[in-house]
Length: 224
Image 1 (cartoon, rainbow, N blue to C red):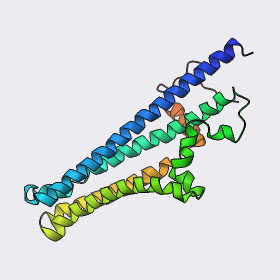
Image 2 (image 1 turned 120 degrees about the vertical axis):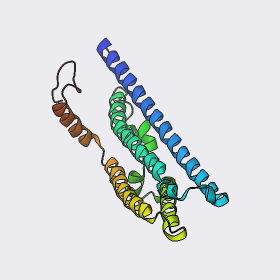
Image 3 (image 1 turned 135 degrees about the vertical axis):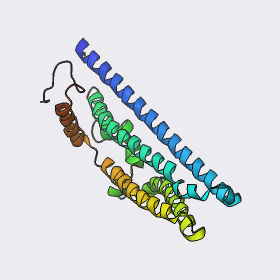
Image 4 (image 1 turned 30 degrees about the horizontal axis):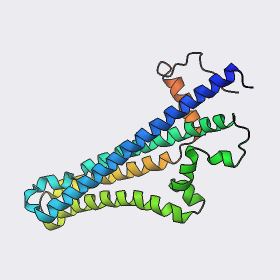
């Protein structure tokens, strides 16, 4: 029969778990909203170019991709937060499952939030060679990337090749976009490296560097 401390521990774990899951759902909702904004923006720009291209001032064309790149940058931040939360959720799930000894491995490894990760996270699917399942995720992210690249290339080619004006601005923005895309690619790649070990390292480093912002009630000590 569990004692009061065990029940309190389980209740606290369950509360933390629910909070983490809620945070992830909220973040994913924001990410979906950002993608919807990106698609709507690209659609409006495409419709204007197709029907009323003369209404767009030529000096604005090279900067049209800027909002799309800002959306991608914000989406990258949200993606990193989801991966960080995933590490917390996995730990809490395993601690909660410790309270149910009848559920054994490997079943306990995929119960809860982890089950979704096993069927839609691209790094996992590619490493496990589940290419059929990976296709949908690749198309999703690839589609967003295609929209951004198409919008960027079109906005640069029009002033340089078609209108042949504001070329200096177009070339300048081309350099800016190239740097931004490289940085965004590095950002997404670093997200895939987020795991429990890296989170531990970053947390300890942040605690040492910013002790006033990472205070703990009972002081800091390494877990046994």
